[in-house]
Image 1: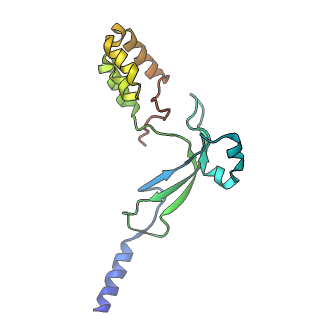
Image 2 (image 1 turned 90 degrees about the vertical axis):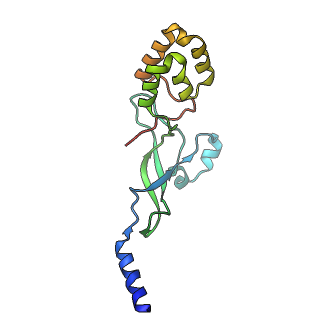
Image 3 (image 1 turned 90 degrees about the horizontal axis):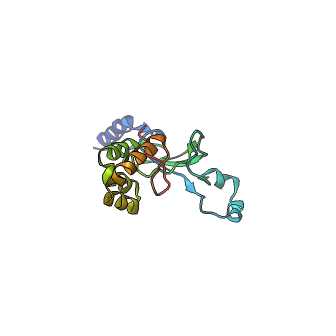
Length: 163
């Protein structure tokens, strides 16, 4: 009986792969954007490399980068370490809002303020709803501003990227 158990364990271990930092993972970056200058000065060089002082970037600029701590989901059976460090991860906070979705919502229901509600601007959405999109003027202006990349989610995060 013991011999069969050893064979099963051997065959099961053949099917396991080494844990990969590129698949089935959740990555985190430490948020240092709320720290004061004095608190930032107290961080060691290693600690600073694991977090972001600023998130996102202006139009045409690259965001800052840091080393992300990534963990392979524990439900994924693999051999080796489940935690990895991934260097040069962009400092981006995603709001979970898809840009193409907001464009479509703005195009078809923007005159009702639906685009502003989706973006988290509740008061502006209500005002836009009550004025029927500023009789179409506000609706057209918002559609143009969205297309030009001048309106972002209210929480300051970046668009949801689907890579």
